[in-house]
Length: 164
Image 1 (cartoon, rainbow, N blue to C red):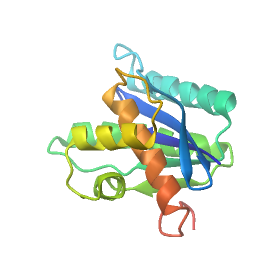
Image 2 (spheres, one colour):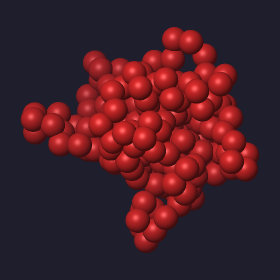
Image 3 (tube, rainbow, N blue to C red):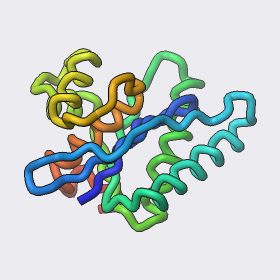
Image 4 (tube, rainbow, N blue to C red):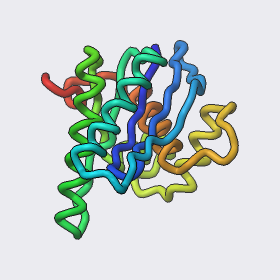
């Protein structure tokens, strides 16, 4: 089963693909989508959608998972992140993929055993679980791989699947 993990953001959306082979996970690919910050919001969201669409068409995942948004102190930033997250949720669904959602604490606890783990701990465990992750992986891509792994470990429960 090929799992696409997505770490949504308007400036940087991380993506990571893993194959689940029985109880083992294999690194496939990862990267970051960086919409042009000089474009109007609608065009940035379109660019995000088109990039995700191309990823899905190229890599053909079987399922996807997205990190749930946390509310930050700046309402404008939260709203923009929510708009990007909407595109990130919608695009895999348009391809008929089931989309799981996981909180940051669920992801950290699943990957490290600690719900309030530091980013470097999550990154280290992603590298331990996926032995062929290249050095210099951008943080957003590493986070997306953690999301994909979480989806693989926790499965497709009714609580995490949209539309059920």
